[in-house]
Length: 338
Image (cartoon, rainbow, N blue to C red; front, side):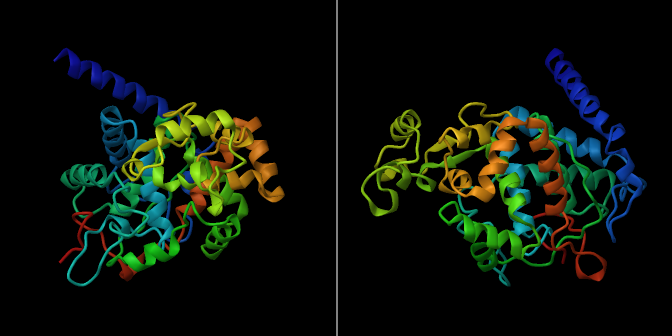
């Protein structure tokens, strides 16, 4: 009983602390609709939605701090593939192969159970009212805020899509092995820009990567048989110990930001400046003059990064939104309504 009361007290602190943001500089957004979406879409139909999502995310992070990065990544992977329509949450059916088993998601995408749990709670109080994609967007925001990152206003009113495509996920999601120009082209094709590439890459301030995603930098960079010369020597030595050059280490996890593992801050950019970016795509940001200047700015100014990250997340949340008759509000996030 004492443990339950303590846990509930901590939740109330988190709830009221994060809720202060609603009364701050973001408050004016809430009476400004953006097309069919609005910031107060569920105020009357599901007034406790924010609290339910916040509680669900808090409980998930209390059980597993890695879940913050997983929820943020899940939201990004959803929106980047044919828009923010909850397709990443769908299981395969006889009619389509979904995104869960696409190469960028297979054995790495996590958080489906958290969204399913929140959705089940929401359905009890607001049946057939709140879309899964909106729950995911809110959960990603809460995960960042609870990790010490910035708040941003989340537009609501999206509908869930009716299908998913493994092929689309394989083709559209950026890879850590790709050159910066290719990654930038993918972002531009979605209506984002080079600044968004740099800013949203900052999400790697939390989370982990499997060794296979960067191991070639440690032992055989671009077929040279040698490590990536841009890696800091001490950082390289630590990584070679964590991820030895054997196949069984491929799925071992390494923190994307080993300095402040669970803290959403600007350390990611400081690491890159110090030649300690984990992924090739991370370290590449300092090698291009157009992005290097932004990396240095964000490494020096955490408030600038927080402001720009929030702005880019708002842009991300507007991609490919479904409204009207083209979607539905799923009863379960893993399956289209029959």
